[in-house]
Amino acid sequence: MRPPLRAAATLAAAAALVTGCSSGDDWSRPHPKPSAIGTLGPGFVKPSATPVPESTTTPRPGSWSGVHPSEDYRVVLLTYGDDRPTKTLVKAVEDWAEDEHVDLRTVVADNPHDFIPSITEAREMRPDLIVSAGNDLIDPLATVTPNHLDQRFLVVGAELAEPTHNVTSVDWSGASFRGEGLGMSSTYDAKSFTAERCAAAIRAGVAAVLNDLTGIVIWLDDV
Image (cartoon, rainbow, N blue to C red):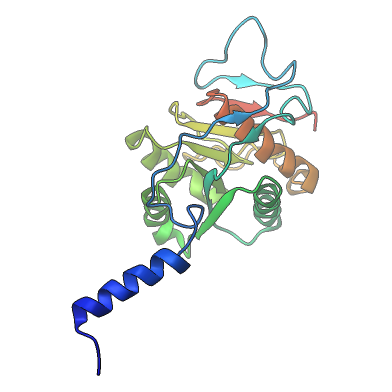
């Protein structure tokens, strides 16, 4: 004999409590505010002044390596493009997330008409941080980010021309795409997107965000 629908629902709910996802899988559950584990090394920023929004800082190489995200750090990787620089950035983010035990989810935009809906999808997941990889996402991000100042964004391998305080970028001479019709930088060099530099970009950027050094551009020419 089949159980009544209400009884069946109760059984299903009980089973979900026993076999359901951990807190790292269910982002709808309460989540502590993330924090930095460890401290920034000397030379990440000038000791005389904290960088102001829209400014550029050139940290000493490796000065970010002692900073790690707290447990269950929730990150959405937002990406578009199958060019080699973008693929290298994506791989760097994935490797970093695995090394740091970050709860990473990925949103891939299918086509240009999907850029803003994809950003919205990533934001509605309510992550601690949205990491963007791919030059074509810069202009859509410039449109969306000023309207959602409570959501933190990290752009790797490019930058917004006029970022708000919730958008941090990591860039270098061979990258430096800024969107807004400015075209590709004359110094753009796809070969500059090395695995080493992209790995440094995600680590340096997250270290800055975790230390509330946001809205700035982190310049990594020395990596």
